[in-house]
Length: 143
Image (tube, rainbow, N blue to C red; front, top):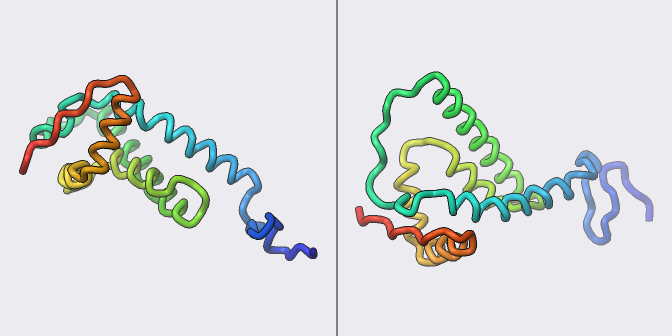
């Protein structure tokens, strides 16, 4: 079977020649790392994370501004990578959710509460939290 200059044979699939050959391994390692880190991150959240309104903000110090900027930059990059992973191999939706959770934008708290009030999401969060050995979250307060 002749190989065209734009694709490499992968059984029935064709891997574009412009993509590096190590990319599937990197995506697999990244996906596994996320699946392992997600329960740990959930376990570190306070038990009452979804209870009450948003916290009042104090003025940020220069060090906090740098952390804020880096966190938002990483969140934006993760959202963009997640969008790319929707068509490439990888955990696209999970990466998008992780990127959105790192970012700080208007309406984030309302979006988080809307999402976790879904019964399937809530039960999944509680299962992951118990798997990580943390106490279950308190249910979110009604609006």
